[in-house]
Amino acid sequence: MRHNFGAGPCILPQEVFKQASQAVLDFKDGLSILEISHRTAEFEAVVDETTRLIKELMNVPSGYSVVLLQGGASLQFSMVPMNLLPEGGTAAYLETGVWAKKAIKEVAPFGKANIVASSKEANFTYLPKDYTIPEDSAYFHVTSNNTIYGTELFDFPQTNVPVVSDMSSDIMSRVIDVSKFGLIYAGAQKNIGPAGVTIAIVKDDILGKSGRKLPSMLDYQVHIEGGSMYNTPPVFSIYVAMLNLRWLKSKGGVAEIEKENIAKARALYAEIDRNPLFKGTCAVEDRSRMNVCFVMENPELEKSFLKFADENGVEGIKGHRSVGGFRASIYNALPITSVHTLVELMQVFAEKH
Image (cartoon, rainbow, N blue to C red):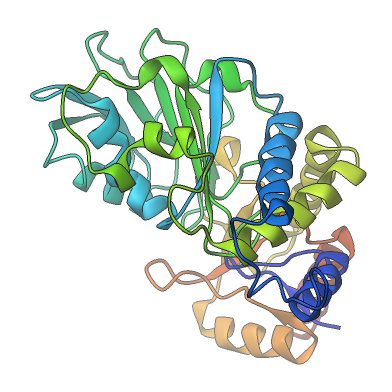
C-alpha cells in the first residue's frame, strides 16, 4: 500500500476513483464522461448537484453565488482585483507566503496593493497578528493556508472591509462562517477534486462596482449568469468533484472531517516534537493542519529518511524546493492510518540513528 502525502494534485478517496473510472467507460448509454456534451441534461444535473453540495457542505447563506471556473487560483489572483478594485483604488493584502506574493503581484495593472503586514523577514514561518486594515480598502485579501511553509490562519480579522480569501489548500477541511467573506476562491486539487476546476463563492452585492469594462471570461457576473457554463467547462474535473463532495457528505460533512483532520495533525506534530531527530519549522500556534512542515536536526540524514520512507510505502513528503526538509500534506481523504504509518517510520528511523 502506498501512503500519498503529496501536496497536490493529491489523494482522493478510493471509492471516488472507482466511480470516476467507471464513468470514463460508461457515463450514459455507453458514452464516456470524457465525451458527453456539457449541454446535456445529464451533465447539467452534475453541475447543479456540485454547486448544491458546495452550498450545503459550507452552509453558504443567501445572497451568495457559487461558480465553477478554470485557470486555478493563479487566474483568481488577477480576477479578484479586476472585478473588485476600482480604478485608482487600493486593496489590502496580508503577505504570508509564495502564493500571497503572487496574488499581490497581479494587482498592479488594476490599482494598488497595500501590504498591511508580512512575515517575509522570518521566511514566512509565522502569521502576522497585529495589523490594521484601512477602512478605505476595496477589499482585504488573505491566503488561509500556506502549503509551502506550513502555516494556517484560524482566526480571520473582524473588519467592515470585504474579506477575500484564497482557500485552495484548506477549503472544506474545517468549518468556516462564509458570511464573514466577500469572496472565497479555491483550486479544487487539494480537498475538492482533481486539478482543472476552481471554486468561487461570491457575495453578490460586491460585484459591479469596479467601474471598468471586463472581458467576458474574466467577469464573475458573466459566469454566474451562465450557470458556470458560459464556455465549455472542465467536465471530468467537475464530475469527480461531485463524487468527492458526495463522499464528504456521507462522512458527516465538514464538521466531522474537521475532527479527523485535527486528530491527524495532532498525532504527527506530537511525534515531530517528541522525536529527537525532527523539529517543526513554524510557530506552534500557526501550524497548519493540512501541510505539516518539518526538518531534521541533522540535515545530512534527510536523504536517508526520504529513501527509508519511500521503501516503506510513504511518498510525497519531500519539502518544497524553496524550503527543503519535509512536508506531509494530510488533506481530507488521507486516512489517519497513513499518518500512523509515517509516525512509526519516524520512530524506527530514530532508533536506528
